[in-house]
Length: 469
Image 1 (tube, rainbow, N blue to C red):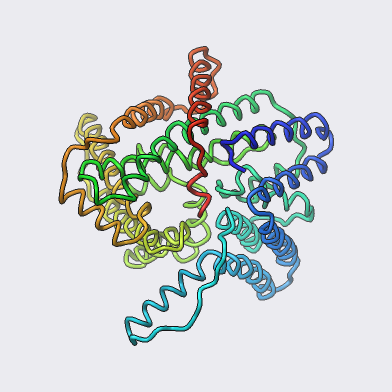
Image 2: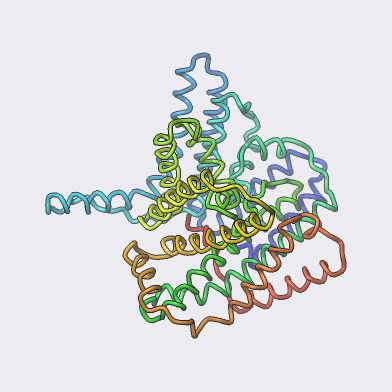
């Protein structure tokens, strides 16, 4: 079920009425309703994969209790290993098995000139599997590290794992934030509900008006990149940068807004990343729930940055490579993560060795130029993310410089991007006050945004990009 569909609108209206007007005085019934609604929401795509979520839920629910009750460190490790192995096994089988088999066959053939008889498996990637497996693993790890106490309420825990607003494409929630809210009584708050509706409208504007309109040009350019000049190719990469941002952050806004309608607060997943002055800042602002997950559960445990530089760079390489692979079973994603790692290290070196500013004008000039350079670099790295193969990505970049000319087509979408950047610039200083203001001008803007979203939706409807990750 797509957020940008009539089906979802009907679904959320019915759920909202039952949730607040029928079960408003019974927490257990509210949580049961959330759980059933979440399973219905997910089963809308393919009901067969509900079994994977239920299996993951039961394993981590039991392991969490066992870890907490275990009297020895070794026994705690045993139950933690069961939890992690079961989640990673499911994730590996459905998402990465064919990728590693193909990679092994290619390497083996290049060395021995012999063909391996191992067959790939014909399998469908379950929607959102990378999100909910990471969410349940963090629960077990936090209990093991004594940062969290397990719950014995299976319904509430199941609702935490399958919570439909963020189930398919995040943000990746921690049990320490979401689970206590599900275990506590919730009362309808008009202001919170109003904020939720605003965020849903803003997210729909990003997705339907900006991302889906840009997608048409992006698809034409990337699928036929040899037919366009360098200016048009750069424009295609430029458009994709805003397509993927508006698509993904739009989903997060709708998810957070929908949660608010249910009296639940999710953490922000984006903080205006394209206004970053370096790649490190970009990753503090982009897909925050994933980057902090890798930081807390992998980067810091293997040493983090409080080690020798060579070890720190190794740790960064591990994190960025895994981050790339998390996005998809393709070498393009791995190289995308690797390129960000190299840029991260270089930008850190530049920052550590940059000169001191003599006045505010020098500082302003530095921040402006570094912001422009950072954004251009990010645009080029997105080419690897969007391309089908590494060869296509490098060819795409080569053609940008090889036959550069001013773009003759696809220029109308620049107006959409300019409008969006202007709006982002206005709200980036104080997002909450502007987005949730009762000012008449702001209200007119939201009604106009909703109107544009409805008009655009009637022309084109597409899934969110991160559904396949």
